[in-house]
Length: 411
Ligand SMILES: Cc1ncc(COP(=O)(O)O)c(C=O)c1O
Image (tube, rainbow, N blue to C red; front, side, top):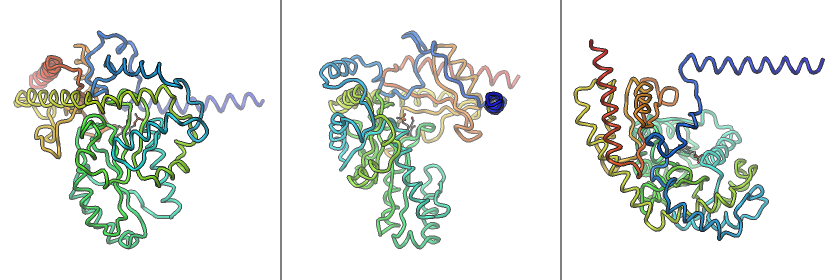
C-alpha cells in the first residue's frame, strides 16, 4: 500500500515535469545541452561562442605553467571540505596575492562566480527581510544615467531613512554585459552616488565576470581601468571565463570578508576549491601578471574592431530587422570601448546560427526569454585565437544566408 502511494506521487511528479518541458518545447524555449561530439576535436567548428576570450584554455604556455606548478605543489587533489574546516593554506595564499594584485584590502574565494553572487546577494536579501523594508529592489533602464538619476531622486524623496543615512542603498552592475557587450557607466554611477548620498550610505557592487583579464592594467578589470578601486564596495572576478580556470574572488573590505565567512551559505556549506583548481587559478594569474594576457587582450579587441569595420559597410542594403549592429558597437569611445562580445541583431537567429554551424562556425542564437522580445540575436564572441580570415568567413556566411532570406521574402 505504502509503495503504491509512493508510485502514484512519483508519476504525478513526472507528469508535471514532463508537461513543463513540453510547454517550453511548444514555445520554442526548450533548453538542451549541445551535442558533445560537436566540440570534441580540434577540427570542430570555429569558436565564436565561448567565454574563453583570451584563448587561454588552449594555450600551451598556460598548460605548461599549470603542469609544472601542479607537480611542485604540496597538495594537488581535493581540498577535503568546507573552507571553515580544512587546510586553507593554498586558498589563503591565493587570496593574499589577489588582494595585492587588485589593490583591494581583502579577498575571499568562492567555488564559482555564481556561488559568490548567491553568497553576497543573499546576505542583502536577509538584511532586507530582517529590517522589514518593503519594496526594496528596483531596476533602472539598462545603462541609462537619466533613468538611474531619476530613480535615485525618487528614492531620496520617498525614503527619509536613506537621506538620513539610517538605511543603505546597494547598486549592483556588471562592468561588461554578456548579452549586449555594453559597459556600465561606472564613473558616472560613482559620481552620482557620491553627490546624492553625502552620508556615504550608497554602495556600488561590480561584477567583472566578462571583463576580467581583458580590461585595465594587467587585465585587472574595468574598475581598475577607471581608477575606481577605492570607490566600490565589492568587485567580483571570475576565473572560468577569460582565465580558463574555475572559481571566483570577491574583493572587498576586511570587515565584509569576515561577514561573508560568517554568513555566506555558499561559502560555508560547500567543499572549498580543490588544490588543483587553486593551482590552475594561480597559473592563470601568472599570465595576467607577466603581461601575456595584456597582449592577448590587445589581439582580441583589435579583431573585434576589424570585425565591426568590415561588417558595417556591408549592411547598408540589408533591412535592419534581418541583420544589424547595435549603435554602441558602431561608435567606440573610452566609455564604450571595443569588446569581444558583439551582438548581431536579427529576427532569424536560429536559421542564421544553424547555417553558420553548417559552414563550421559556432555562434549561438540568443532569444527570448534570455533577452527581451524583439531583441533576438546571434551573439558573436571573439577570441584572441580567432584570425582575420575566420572573421572574414563569418561575415561572408552571415551575409550570404541573410541576402538569401531577403531575396526569398521579396520574391
Ligand atoms: C555576469 C556574470 N556573473 C557571474 C557569472 C557566474 O560565474 P561562474 O561561471 O564562475 O559561476 C556569470 C556566468 O557564468 C556571469 O555572466
